Length: 182
Length: 190
Figure 1 (cartoon, rainbow over the protein chains, first blue to last red):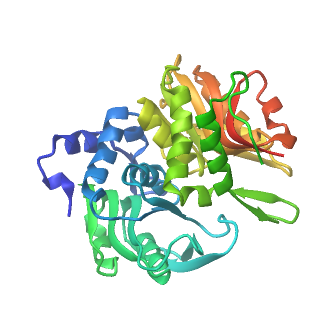
Figure 2: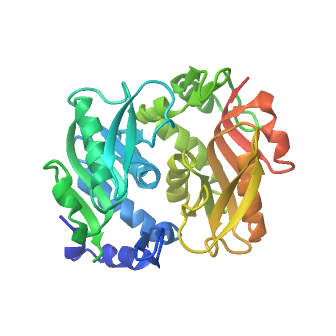
């Protein structure tokens, strides 16, 4: 589901605050930069309000945020809905015992880690990142949470790149985004 | 682990209770990332919604009337604590990042590590001259990273009002490295 198809006036302002930076991190990529949104307190607050309004009555007990930009948007949601915040991190960043999930990149592989014991069986989880592209990272996040016995209720991102079809790679889980970028 | 909040004024009892609970949620992991280091893990604090909310509230109560216009958070754990503070006080949030993560034009500041150097970057144009800034990270150790963050802000003529961390490792004397810039922490670990 994309909020940008709704009439909510906040969405258009949010979309206008996202800056596109060409040829980053490499030639041909149009990078969707959310940092300019964070410079507008009203737009940032509206972004968080849109997510909180959607999730506050869904009995979510854990918000998992993907390093690093998921760390910006996940915690305010968790705080507002009274859920735990669980960081999902690149390898060797989390101290103590972790579980790892490998995933494919355009060239090569990467890994996402989560603390053992952070999430209990049957918890209801929301996964948050700033953007979904191919869906590889979000898929790894869903796997980690399911391996810990949690139920992933939804994935939430500010931006979707629909042409990359990441929505189809989420193990059947629903995706909610605020804006699409073609 | 001792509770150490505002340096000068006495701490209200309610604050001490909240700080004690926050302190109790922080997990110490020995020998991470290398032997001899006692790592202060705040992820267990984030698993306790009351403790996490109290942490943010304690910072917000301190800063909401200080006319802070920008909260700068140091990657990556500063991204967890900085944005909720920024949202609550109506300030901009500016991420301070490791090299090559921020797209577009950046300024860089090098700083020393135990062995070698590293760099922190900030977007050109994110902060304006005269902005009143708060720098946020989960922990201050030697103060090298916070110092670099402060320098980035000062180079664009912002005024750094204070640095705020959840935890201070007092024996590493990071507070001294910040010079005359005040530091506010919730928990001091010796």
